[in-house]
Amino acid sequence: MTNFIDNDSKSFVKTAMSLPLLEETHELDLALKWRDKKDEKALHELIQAHMRLVVSFAVKYKQYGLSLGDLIQEGNIGLMKAAQKFDPDRGFRFSTYASWWIRASIQDFLLKHWSIVRIATTSKQKSLFFSLRRLKQKINGTDTGNINYSMAENIASDLNISTSAVVNMDSRITQNDSSLNKKISEDGQDEFLSLLEDENARPDNIVFAKDEINHKKDMVSTAIGSLDERETQIINERHLSENPKTLEYLGKKLKISKERVRQIEKNAMNKMKSFINSHFD
Image (cartoon, rainbow, N blue to C red; front, side):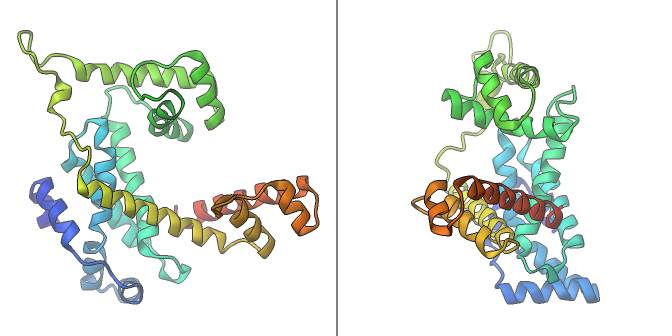
C-alpha cells in the first residue's frame, strides 16, 4: 500500500477504485488467516480491497481545506488499525467496522490541523464541529455566514448541548472560513477559495455516496439483530418502512398503549446505539 501513498492523490484514487471488491466468504477467509496465522499476504489483500473506503471519506472531508493526500494518508492509518483489531467472529463485514476507524482517524487529523487553535476538545464539541455545517444548511438553507440566536437554539436542541457552545463554535469556524476569501495578493483578483477544486457532479462522488449509504445500512442491520422480535417490529415499522406507522397504530396492532410503544421504541434505539458503540469502537 505504501507505493500508492507515494503517488499523487489522483493516482491513488484511480488505483483504489479499480481494485475488485471481496466476496463475503473470501473476506472472512482473509480475516481469519490474518487473525489466526498472521498471514501478511491475506492482510495486504484485505486492506487493498478496502482502500476505496479511505478515498470515500477523504473526499467527503476535503471541504475543510486540508489536502486530499494528507486525508488519504490518515485514512490509511485508520484502515490499518481496523485490520489489526477486526474480529471476524462477530458476524459483520469488515467494511462496516473499518468505516468507523477511517472516519475517526481523519476527523482527529482535521481537529488537530484545521486551525491553530484547537477547535474541539470533548466528544460533544467534536460532534458539533462536524455537524454544524449540515445543520445550518438544513435549518437556514446555507452553511455560510454566522447563525442567529434562534438557529443556535435549534441546533443546540438537536445535539443536546448549550446554545452558547453552538454560538462559540460557529464563530470560530466562520473566522477560519472567512480567511479563504482573502485575496492571494494585494493586487490580485483571485481568492484562496478559488484554488480549491470544485467537486460538484463528479462521478466518483456519486459512487462514494452510495458506498457510505451501504456501510450505514450494514451497521443498522447488524444493530437490529440485537433486538427482540417486538423491538424489531416497532423499529422496522416506525423508521424503516416506506409508510412509517404511528404510535397509536402500533399500539392497537400490538395490543399495548401508545405510551408503551414509545418506551419500547426509545429503549430499542438506545440498545442499538450501545450495540454499535461496543462493536465498532
